[in-house]
Length: 441
Ligand code: UDX
Image (cartoon, rainbow, N blue to C red; front, side, top):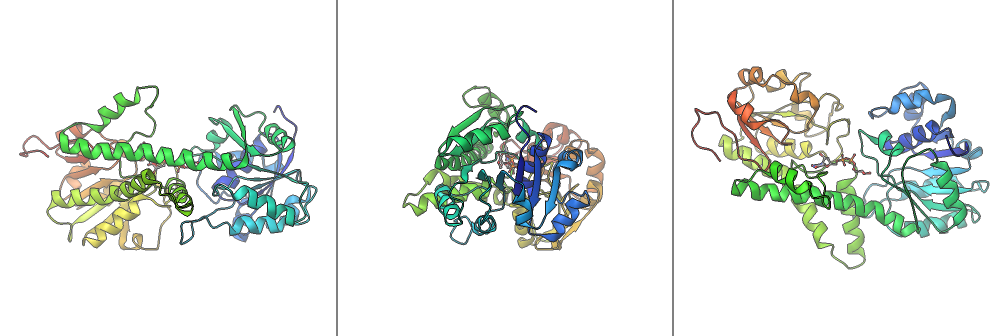
């Protein structure tokens, strides 16, 4: 590594905290991870990773001599130069971010005046930095530097994103803290963007809201394609070749989910509303995304005549492949809507943890796609797990009561499915039907 080996305390052993800890340890730093959940710390000490994130377990194991896990905040900062705050900031009833966990960490830092810097990685409203600065001063940490260093890691590729980022955003008012953080990231191949704290906080919210807008734009375009006979995939491929636009995040589907886009777009909207400004574009983005799984249910209903007592198989539950995360997964809205229409649900997912809460407690979970689709009136491809591209759909057809597949991620070839007898619905493309069936959408 290029920089000096430093001692870092990471508060929060969730997705972001653990990835940050693993990657800093990989860069040669000594890292102490502190969490308030005893079970989490016990698992980590035993060499288990409490979350599913490719490459994370291996990286924690490879660097275990530089990683310590503790429940004790004082132990976490005893040797540390830098304290990273990576706790969650869930939305409150008003749509503001609940910063109570951030304040709890700052309270626990009281007296740690040997620290060189405190850094917030958690996503927070713009303006939080000045409140954190005041809280640090009040806790006797006036001489400790402060920075915002937002994360831009996507689940499923978080380690890769951390070590090969498009940019490292460092928002701070003081030069020494900026130099320290730049050094801490030495060995990472990515441009450092140095700015004030408020701008750094805004970069995170603006990036996620713009990505959510891009997805929503293609989803709305898909609806127009369905009505006019255009194929949204062809459109996205050609639009995306314009270097000013790019192809990324132009995949139409059942809408975005996950821990960031829904929360951050609502947070930015709430923040704007609190200043008396209505962020109209974001209002539309959020509304369209909410409609996306509902439209799919409506289209299925139109195709089947009714959903009442129909057996529907949901293939994939997580909000995207490569993660076990179910937060704000479109599958949950789909499942609830289908149940509300009187459907019987079966589901399959290779990693989603069994859920005992509604709506999943009303769905039959199966270990294989074949079992999930047996006697189904329709199957919905909800999450584009690679396994679903390997499925022998001809064999699946014979297991289903009706050969109807709704490809909610436009991941399969509708013409090929129609050739083996499926009616294949998808998003923003004409419904493909077997030759002998009459009519098309
Ligand atoms: C995202 C951002 O990518 C990351 O930078 C940020 O730090 C956190 O939020 P993540 O939520 O892990 O990461 O997932 P991402 O891969 O970005 O996908 C988000 C959602 O958008 C998924 O539900 C995905 O299915 C959906 N999506 C993505 C689309 O519907 N179409 C696309 O073209 C791309």
